Image 1: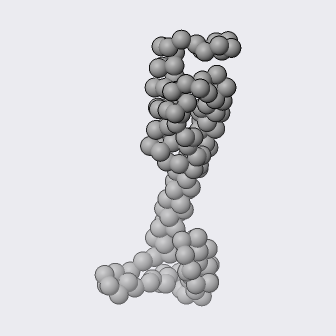
Image 2 (image 1 turned 180 degrees about the horizontal axis):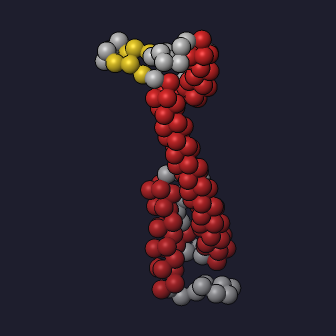
Length: 147
């Protein structure tokens, strides 16, 4: 099996180890097969390759754990964004219902998108908070039940 990418390293090493075991079984026990590394002019034993494979598997597990953490954090952020957009939409709906013929309607911020990054997502929310504070400072229009 050739190495085709990061996911193929461990299965390929396992095939090498199985073949290496067969080669060692055919050799005298006092002279097991050693693989020579040409660049460093050193040798590697089967046990050393097993240790390297195990270290690689531990690193793969650590990377997968971090990816899972990242996905969980992204899910938490998405849920928070949905809740914030729902509240933002409630604000703009009330703004359009009760402050339609006021100058506040012209200051209405545009809604962000769920796919927007932090700065682009938070900017309209901050604008809505500022507008909300200014609306609360003024008189309530006719028909507005609460602020």
